[in-house]
Length: 124
Image (cartoon, rainbow, N blue to C red; front, side, top):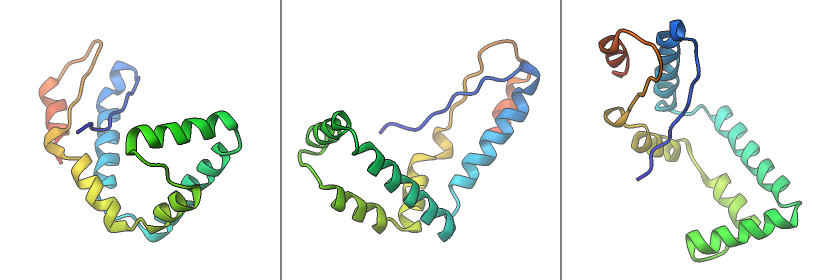
């Protein structure tokens, strides 16, 4: 399974603050999504999907990717319905699996001190 990742570029003296902010954000992602936020995310996702379908190259990429990855092609209406059907529980279940604290990794490139402190900061 592929896990999500991120990249931060900060001044060395801000490394700890950046790690704290990332850990706080990941912790928040593992909490239940409020209904208003879920609605906003769904509308954003549907809007982006609709905008992508205004370009023939994007439509071709959409169709090809679905066939290649899923072995079938869903219509836009079917996809919109799937987006609408997502619940807070669905999001929580996926977040629990994808944001497993035991699999959290950190790489710091550049001058830094306090490796043990950074490791402690990664505990949820």
